[in-house]
Image (cartoon, rainbow, N blue to C red):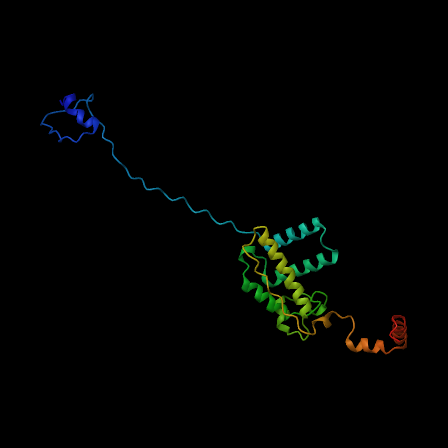
Length: 219
């Protein structure tokens, strides 16, 4: 049996030579020393959280429109036009999670717009046809610059709203409008320049012009 004096260095961690254990010697339970053993436990990495799939474009379109309705910042005509533009976007691009919409998709959407006819939904010729089928027909008359830019501008406003509310990292629709040509204003004229010239040649207009000049003192 090892005495308590012999076991004391083990208790206090003193660097003493190891004591030989003679054959047949035993260590009593009262003097046994428990020596701690360092165990290296490797931390198990936590499983990575699955990224939540974002909201679909159709869901955000509805939320966007509802917010504008509550703010009463839209006229009925503006809302109707915007809803029509959103439906067109879904027909061309598809109803996807907002974060999967890329700049290239918007560029492809823009290119498709240039091949579509005006009054697409009102023309019986295109009823029941997909956008791809309509484009394949090769329409002779397509959307003008003013209409194209209206569609692209409304989509850019929507993507900016998504960015502002944290649904998208950036506005993928910004800067997509076409540059206006010199005659872009003509697209919005209710009459052609020839029509205006003819009206000014009528006697009633000549009389009004004459009276106007007399009143202002030019004549």
